[in-house]
Length: 259
Image (tube, rainbow, N blue to C red; front, side, top):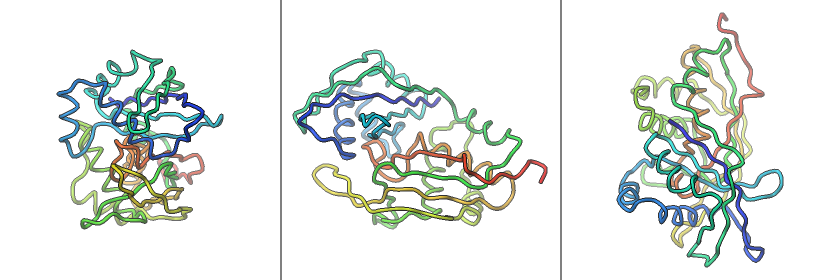
């Protein structure tokens, strides 16, 4: 099960919110959930949730929260959603913010995402990812300032296989095929810094367009994984507010199932 929630936030007038506040919301949320489960989250390498901050069309700050499996969806509902609206203490800033009723709530599943792409009469060959908060990948012990298709697809495959239960796809051949047939067609990216525990991580934000070649089945799988990015996030520290992603295929070039 995947649960996506968008929660508008009221912030005191004397505070200016930026993307790095995502780590503050992470800390505050940890205080709401059962201690044993919080310890379990801390120990896991791949977290079963992602979250980040965005601004909506009304310039209101919105907290975007995603649960990637049924267990964490239940925790999210019990610890937070059933209590809304609620005041939340951000201790590092000595600020009290107000979480309002969700403006959007989506429940879906890995199977529904797979069916959306594999049962469609058309095959999407062009996709757009928008990185809404600073994003970086770790490769060979270093944080990478610019994305590659290998880093993007491997990040998504790891998250998908960790939480999609019976729909695991990430064998070595598939990774090789995706690396060969997914290419960056265009990009508009800028560097960005994100504060975590008084340290700064350098990353990027902006948008890029990906083109998928090769067999239809591979293109469908790539589309499914890229669609999943809007829930899982991309790169490192997605539970702290980095790697926020929106996904779009409305401008995609399609080929029919029979072509």
